[in-house]
Image (cartoon, rainbow, N blue to C red; front, top):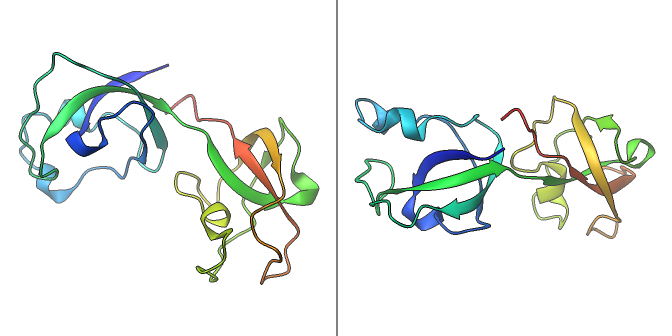
Length: 150
């Protein structure tokens, strides 16, 4: 189910994805707080529609102001232990990885997915983008289902 919120004008494009990071200190005293701060921190969202007749509002956080958009939780791609990679199952990520130069790092520590919570696998994508894991983990690339409660 989609929600109406305000996001930075630079992000206000259909299919744009972002991870909502929560309230910034510059939000104190803003008259638009209730419209901006209505998402769940740490969740990845996708813009489904940009309100065309809405004005761009001034914002202390976003240099080009904020626009009204509709968003919905987005799926997250991640590497998980292969022995647990089954569509419909719930799984935790394998854990942190210090190898930031690895082509799979963005999937081992994906934005929008907690390392300590379980996530439901919507689809098994296949082999991860790396040739070998520096931590000797046997991993499979999957897509987590969006958090419909967010």
